[in-house]
Image 1 (spheres, rainbow, N blue to C red):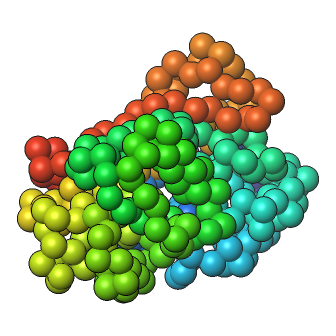
Image 2: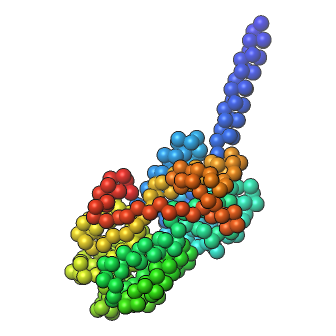
Image 3: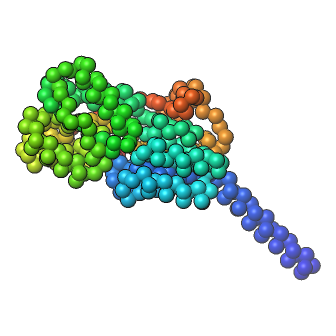
Length: 330
């Protein structure tokens, strides 16, 4: 009898252990590699990832490199491949630099979800909360209104290798050239908008070299902050206008003081949640098709050729909205 009971308990323990292992194996694992860690935009995205992962039963983490270096993103993705995660998410600094490692991930059976990377080929889906053309043109029109449709302006991007930032800049510059011929672009564009100090220094240099400079269009979350600080230092609030996407919590004071004239954004925390939602759909083998509804994106019309899901969910950032947005943790 003792031997029978011992065997029974051992069998029950084995089944419980096996059941737990099976449950763990069924839980999708996901790593999201962003452009850079430690800045408010991606801190908010990480919050969204964690919230949705806990809700949806996904083991998801965010990896933020110490600088906006594509090589660091490649290394982080290599680590995720070695860990055999179910899904890799990425917000690319350089789409082309990531293609080989993302191809390696997909060859290993890992699903790939991109954000701000519509040109990436080796992905299952890329999702956008704003179209490149709409985002660029909306900012351009606001800059034109602030500048009265004339004067010199400068354009920042996160780096010259961030395709989406440059697509926004292309759309904005083309729009202003066609609609506001009295607005003149100085230089081409400056790849400093993911670094507050670099964007500030560049703004100070440009203001000294171009006394007729009246506006900064900064694509990259740190660009408006740095340029806004430069405007304050030079005593040019109300005379030079800074616009672009930025973290409301980080830029709240500058907006209220007029050093940042405004901008538009999407909610990075919501983007984090969408990463997890789309990743889970892929992990479960569900199809995303025309008419599918995904929380945070709405009813989508995905492009099966480009594997892009483009929506327009822009939120204005100005003196009337910045407190509410900042209080949301953005």
